[in-house]
Length: 572
Image 1 (cartoon, helix red, strand yellow):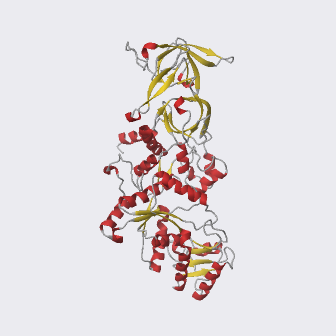
Image 2 (cartoon, rainbow, N blue to C red; image 1 turned 30 degrees about the horizontal axis):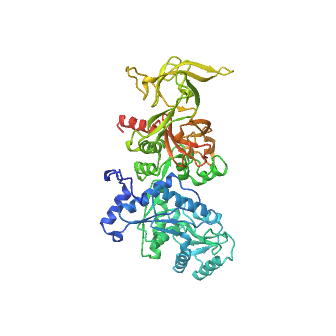
Image 3 (cartoon, rainbow, N blue to C red; image 1 turned 90 degrees about the horizontal axis):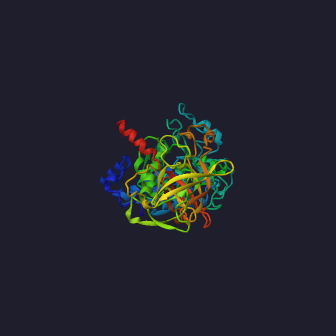
């Protein structure tokens, strides 16, 4: 998939529209920026991308593509103590996996010299000064949302003195926190961000790209707008928390009178039920071993979603469906699950797998006989064809598909009851075999040879169809059943680290000794399947030739479809 494009079966009527696209469309029509559109995705390489970032990626790359523009990838690498090449490589891998390719690859650290020169210009203009207050004193002087700030005693420091101190900060003469460079704006502003914000701080730390060349680093608000300008960005699309920072974004560009002044436009970030999106909280989950690494399939990281079996197509479709809004809201995770079900229903080959096997012996089936039955690979796509499935005298079915004393409305296998085996025959349970403890360990059945293919020539019907695997041909597998990571719908609402108390103790169930049909014996990592009557699964990288491992992506049951029907019936 190329930059910003969509699956071939999506018509133009399905293209999303929103207030951002309307704004861009108006700018293009009015000839602003010469009709040019340039966006960027600017992550900090201090963690792994998650589903919230996917929304921003899809927006930035798609808007650029829709208007024949460009989209850059720029790493906001201005915090040397938290950033690593591991994160940078993972971010690039995830963006490409989503189906996008950037036009230019940039780093904020590429601009350190230019940013330093911009800062010197502000000092010379009387618009910035070196402040020697401590961090706590700066917070105290800044005031509150209801009380104005107070001028720093260093606010009127002579320009030449600030220039000298700033050079010496760069030369490494001072300790961390001894001085900062602040913009000189308005300590009485109603917007706290405009109260002489810090634009440079001292940090004696090696940078993963720049090494030890710098010991002062620019702050995000100063770096971001000027990086956008130097790259010729026309529309700087940011999440809503940066709305209060927009006056500062514009102030730096206006005061420095740069040639290119991008527009910052904010949109609501994505919040998802039953998970957390904070990088800090995700890092805590990983470091405290609540999950098994950044690609744990229970996490909302793109690596986790990929390992769980989500497709890039389903994530892009989900982002299109939820749209772009001006107000923050929380999206039901069932809507994301609905998107992947829709995609996998169309694209995933079917297979039979028995997760909790019980042995079945068909007593009137020849002991030395094996048949190969035709099975449909995907009823949604005839082009996927059929496969051969072996059938023999001894089978496995799901233990839950049998009841010795069936309750009302249980239509599956029971003593004396006839059911259909998928693609095969009608069988009737004639007895059971128990172990020493009295547990049923084997079912004895008979089959009707005239029902091959699943229908009876005399027209009799059965109420249930079961999946199965041939015992002599079955491959033993491990299956990991993943569920939601939290029991609380909104764990982020908990103060501090209280969200950890709502971790779901049943978010992972590992089943060993499962049996799958031979076609699943050597899957490629990332290969996706629908296990008939069970759910959608993906082959995990932990698979070996001797033991395939499958992760459950989602069950077959679609909660979001029910939600949609409920909303429709309520007229909403």
